[in-house]
Image 1: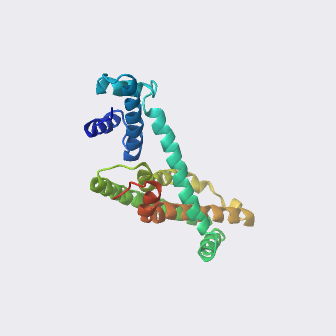
Image 2 (image 1 turned 90 degrees about the vertical axis):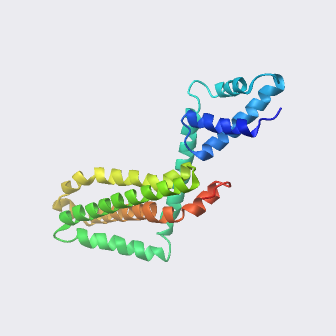
Image 3 (image 1 turned 120 degrees about the vertical axis):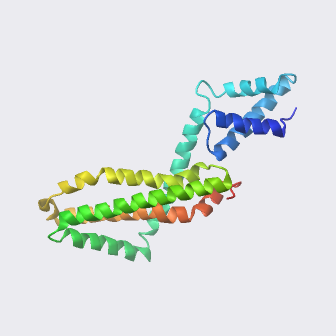
Length: 229
């Protein structure tokens, strides 16, 4: 006995009812449950669909789909950071290495100046404000994409929203920026390390807020064979 198209649609509704928001995970769970229901019908062909569905759902345990959702989030989180790190590595190879070194030298020159502490706070503030602006912009873009496709993909949400989390973390460190003292900045080693950190933060934010969202179509098509905006 095969599951019908109406019953497939009911399974999608069932996953949404149990707090599975992302279409990619819904499709995976629906396929899994459909196979389980058909296996139940092999042994009990007269069992009503609703009872067979509930029997298949019990296999997920007392937490239902929560464990599956958690595992998928971790897997997609690893994929997202893999894409981010791949982009970051590009900035340490020719020809982008020239730009990276220029950014580092720029920060080093600022830290070597007499107004270093104020410059750190100013640079930090500018980056944080830009990140906030881009967070709002990307959130609006994500909503438009979701409205257009009528589907919510987990990796897509990470690409357009994960960067905002980084911005909040950056903002949370703003109050501690003033603690850097001139005596610390007198050390060439300290200035070099701080310049490197500032360079990495700048590149990380640029990749998160600009490069990955601009490559979203390619990344999503690579991840999901059924993806289509």
